[in-house]
Amino acid sequence: MFADNLHSWCRLNKLQLNPHKTTLILFASKNKHIDHDLNVKYNNVKISVVNEGKFLGVWFDKKMTWKKHISELNKKLRGICGMINR
Image (cartoon, rainbow, N blue to C red):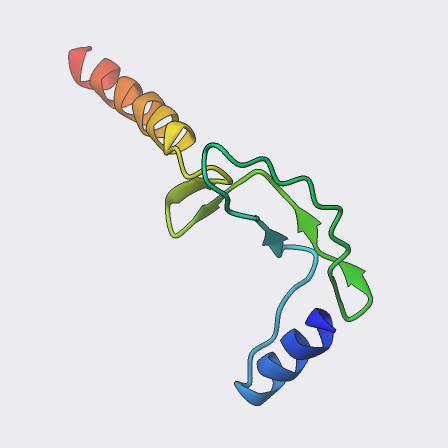
């Protein structure tokens, strides 16, 4: 049902998804544990469910804690500071 709606919505808006590059994140509060076995398909290709992903340079995780984003930003800044220090 969801895949049919997604496919119809993309077709109406003249968009194409690459199901091999598309991922799905279920967002939940920090206190809630969601253990869903989702089987979302688009054009008979399964969309993978991930715990974290990067979108427009911002890392998101399923609990919205920003830990991954801060960690990645910290790595990048340490590298830049090291280059400036040299």
